[in-house]
Image (cartoon, rainbow, N blue to C red):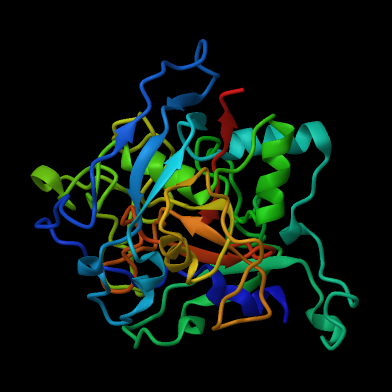
Length: 355
């Protein structure tokens, strides 16, 4: 299957529309943070995440309330996990930072390289062209049961041209880099002396020491009437009204940080984490009856909806997440993506172990 046909693997699928009444009650238990101080001075551009034991996952009360129900169950049940402390990028990796990596290494992203006949032996030659997937608004409201209505494969789309050859990133140095596949993110992280976070590390950091609150910033979607993340307003997928100030991606640091000083842990761009995706990961972990320490996810991927695709977990949601279709800016929810598939709403950030 060509990369353009794996679009469903990274979609902002519908999740729960969490209400302000959500609370840190059972099954969530308080987070127990490690008390040890950061090991030395701060790493440039990163913040110290103390680690500790916390309740990971999504409450059944946050199950889908939009037009595509049932997809948040892969974030259940809530279970206890422990992670060691680590450093984490305070914001998503930017165009400027990724450009420095490319300039130093000559790296070419997957979206810039044409698929080969060896990869896709049955594909006609005219389809073996470099490009990637791009969100395209529909002209009028549509049923939300066919994502091909608002995604297209665009020849020439890549991190330098996120929406195709006629687009570019001039003047957008501080925007998150997108059109990044998992191997691209991993290559950058290795060059930077870092790595991609595990799913457990990412969620511990996103929760900011709090337990069971639906958003990285607390319990209310719009405290005091203020938008706290770059998400989709208006009629999805027709138009993003930009009520939050940004119809589309936003520069990093545009919204308030969470209690650990991390920006855009909800919305803006989806973020790759290192775990393979399985919908039953949390159920299997819960069955162990123990508190797993520093989990790294399953040993192999499996998605029953596309069993041949090798998928990794996405976290955080994106600027396309809408209460009508996708609310995966909920801190406990999960996304998924075929590891060689990129799009114009998927990026990443890195972590660095304490030693």
